[in-house]
Amino acid sequence: MDTTGFPPPTVADVVAALERRFPPAWAESWDRVGLVLGEPGAPVTTVACVVDCVPETVAEARAAGADMIVAHHPLLLKGVSSVAPVTYKGRIIHDLIRNDIALYVAHTNADTANPGVSDALADRFGLLNLRPLHPAPAGTPAAGDGRGLGRVGELPRPMTLAELTEYAAAVLPATVWGVRAAGEPQRVIRTLAVSGGSGDSFLADATASGADAYLTADLRHHPAGEHIAGAGPALLDAAHWATERPWLDPLAAYLRETVGVRTTVSDLDTDPWTVHAAAPAPPEDKES
Image (tube, rainbow, N blue to C red; front, side):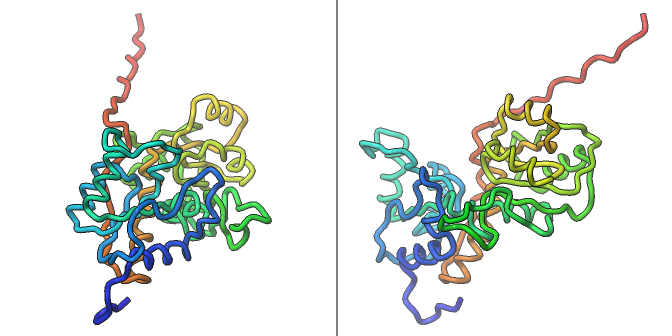
């Protein structure tokens, strides 16, 4: 978008573009999306795209000269009675205000959108013939046009679960967590379901989809074990941040093309797990 000779867009212009792409009405009822802080009329030349609004990503945005941050995860998901700078979130808010940085959140509305968070994740695997894993329910604002949570698609070539796990670790953003899998290592995977972020509430959807494997984050011990025991799809468990970071690239491209702002994309790994040690191989059996 050529903005030569025109005044810079405003916070309100960026918000309008985001809400055309990710209408707030598509968000889950418990979610909190939209403009968190910032003057609507303030000019915006640079937008920083992040998964998490944390002190480190705010510092990145400041260093890049950003006027606005678009984050995936809400900073204020639950109600608070104070944003005093004696609290973790209060300090972030004060830092943003002091540096004239607006904050906008697109969360489950971006998960549901088509294209959205899981489309970007599916693209890392080259999945074909995508369809929603959990379609937006009929009668809701997001219903139709391929919208819904997660995606199911066909791999460009079949892989064993062991091969797919190695491939996932290579194509997803690197984290200490990496990727782990549950299921028979030599099981052949042709169809893969994916869901950015915490996805074990969609285990039944993954089974119903007919997928051979399901990749998401934050899988829990008992639901995963019962799913595998029930002959469901193989499971791949990646770091939460790594499954949502791919969305930042198309988000940034959209803002550049439609609003004419400069964008930055944060590759700062905000996954909380910072140390990983594999168990040593068991000793080989020796004949007595």
